[in-house]
Length: 250
Ligand SMILES: NC(=O)c1ccc[n+]([C@@H]2O[C@H](COP(=O)([O-])OP(=O)(O)OC[C@H]3O[C@@H](n4cnc5c(N)ncnc54)[C@H](OP(=O)(O)O)[C@@H]3O)[C@@H](O)[C@H]2O)c1
Image (tube, rainbow, N blue to C red; front, side):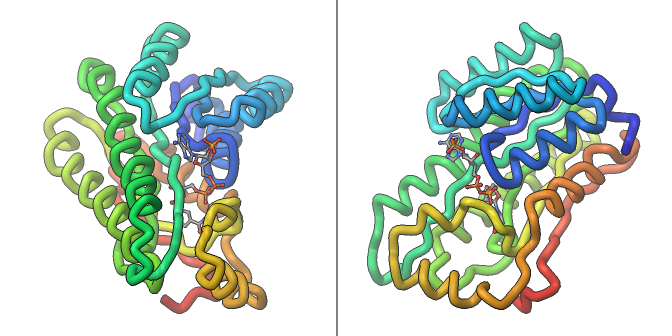
């Protein structure tokens, strides 16, 4: 357990399930004070109670990352409660897979709203504090899909390519000059609720069929990778981590 996270202040978006929930738990276990953000208040409250019950420190702030005012309020609440923001785990996301020829444009829009615009709002809300502090760490949860498109995942991939570009740009513009560290996390298939929201039945069925006999990553596997990056000494800027299940070929 890296002791460098003791009393660090970390905002985790998408903390109500999957990778975000596992990461919030891992950060709290390493001594960080975690601010839990997502839309499902009941899930956030349950996680806050669990973390506090184990002797950790957590604050739950119901947040829709597509609402800029709500995201600004998340940062303000964090600063009021803890006085600084050391880490942003920019993790909230949706994956609405469908063949591009079906033109499910409303779902394309929703992915762009959450995965790109929402992630950018979160970055904008924490950067002023990080720049003033002269330190901060932004962890963007992109995907292996941010390196290459996958069938029925063209627009999802586009959102993750965009996030990866933002990670690279932050490194270029803010790491050496302002001591803002940035990590792009690129998981392969992780067993979470992410695929539950796919509405294209054929795509959902094919995905399920394909993974029936294979072992996906668990959310804690990705949380471990994130913990490694944020727990590294300040001179170390872990810029990218690509982590696939052993069973995943592409
Ligand atoms: N699972 C995978 O195979 C995989 C692989 C690579 C990358 N990823 C990425 O990992 C991230 C986390 O996904 P997951 O796999 O852990 O899936 P998940 O269990 O479905 O978690 C997604 C999280 O995002 C939150 N979220 C969705 N829309 C939101 C909004 N508008 N405002 C605030 N929060 C919102 C959800 O919370 P609420 O519904 O409560 O708001 C939930 O906590 C995503 O960015 C995903 O693209 C996942």
